[in-house]
Length: 145
Image (cartoon, rainbow, N blue to C red):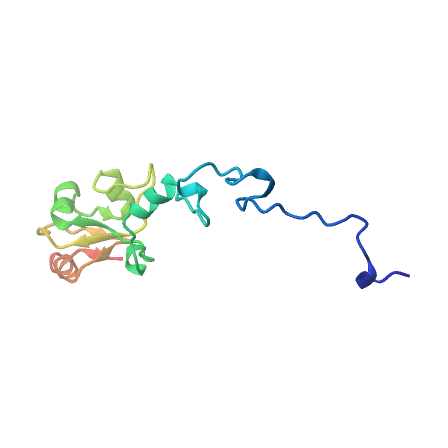
């Protein structure tokens, strides 16, 4: 029985040819005469790598926000487009053209800001609202759901 550490190769080891040190290939040994590539330890940067290195690097976590930012709508536009008693939700805002969604889908988060006044009793569903908007809705008699 032969053990793993007793196994020997049948073939002889082939020696690597040392290029660029004289010998059978001549003085230049296939490297040509002069130039960056003829030197020892020549490392040539590719054009693509140089291009990549020229681009500005964005560092830190602040450039890739984890939270999805909400779409913003002002009260002024809601006052123009909605009638009294209607429901304001991301779907209705998208249908009336106040929001840009992805294709045929409305955005997931919508925030309503207090630019403008509210005079109608409107019901707000699935929308984030600022403090000033909340006060305006309650003052008029609308609902937040």
